[in-house]
Amino acid sequence: ACDATSEAVDLVRHAARVRRHTNIDVRRVNIGLPGDLAALSTAIGQWRTANQNDDESVTLYARFLLHAIPVEIEWALVAWARSVLHVGERFLLEYRTAELDADEYVFGSHYRRPVDPAEFIQVARQAGFSQVHTEMSRDFAGFGDERPLVARSTLEV
Image (cartoon, rainbow, N blue to C red; front, side):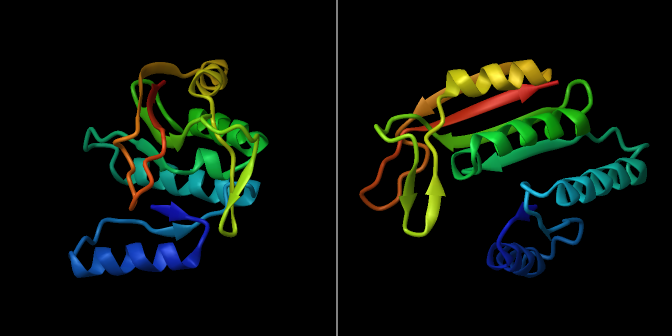
């Protein structure tokens, strides 16, 4: 599990301890920093080595990440994901879609960029992924009175 904020990392670590999940790696990662992605690649490689006889596979999951990063980092993230996933493995994503008039907006102190699912899938295909499924709904991430249009995409190598 990864997040750029130490608060989120601490929360997941605490939840894992409370639930006695011992086989979980939680780390602070800034996907905009190549060194952080390289360290994450190393960790995934080590996990693969430790589990090479277990017929395990890697699945990457990013929830509400795409719309919180600039498009250039999106491209780097997709290229990185393709570089670490093996044939048959998947990249699952949930993100706010391009329903707003503005190209970018700020929610509180957080940067947001509406993502067009068709454009994102095109980027993913260019990186070597195939689209398994994409679905949009206002029922995926309701919060209070807010019902944003959210897409869920499943990509596969």
